[in-house]
Image (cartoon, rainbow, N blue to C red; front, side, top):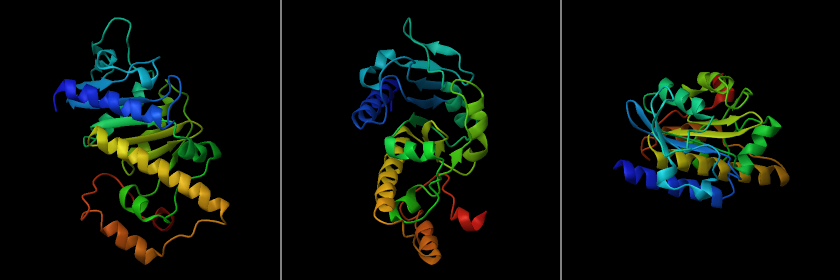
Length: 226
C-alpha cells in the first residue's frame, strides 16, 4: 500500500470506530508503522469522525514530527504506541479505543480470562488488565510493556482497550472481536453465568490457530499456565 492508501485506510477505520460508539469526542488513537522510523498517527484534539488524510501526522520512533499540517500534532497517548513498536518488531499498527463492553470490564477490574467462546479462543486468547497509568505520561507504556510479549489485546485499567497487529486491519479486527466477546460475556452473566469449555477442547482450538492463519501473541489457558 502507498502512504496515501494507508492514510485513507486509517480514516476509514477511525470513522468505523466512531460509528460503532467505541470513541466519543476526541477519544481514541490509531497509528500505523510504515518504515523502520516512520509512523502515521491520528492527531490530538479531533473527533475520529472528522479525521481526513491531511490531518494525520507522521512521526519518527522517538515521537518527533516529520510531517504535519500546521496546527496538528500527535495524540499525547503516542508514547503507548511507540512502546508497542519498540517492544515488538512484528507490530505494524496500534489501536486504542473505549468500546463500552470491553471498557466495562476494565473499569470493573474484571479480567477477560475465561474460555467460553470458540472465536475468542482462536483469535484473541486471554485478555489481561494492565495496571493503571495516567494518560500522556510514561506510566501507561510502563504498565503495558510487561504484557506486550504475550498479548495482542489488553484492557487498560479504568481506561479502555488496546490492540496491536501486523497491519491496521488485523489490529482493528482484534478490537472488533474483543468488543463482541465482551458484550456476549456480559449477557451470559445476566443469564446465569459463563460456561467454559473443557481444557481438552480449549487446547484443540488453540491448536487450530495455524490452520486459520492466526498470527501474533495469543496465550493459552492462563488460569492453568500461571
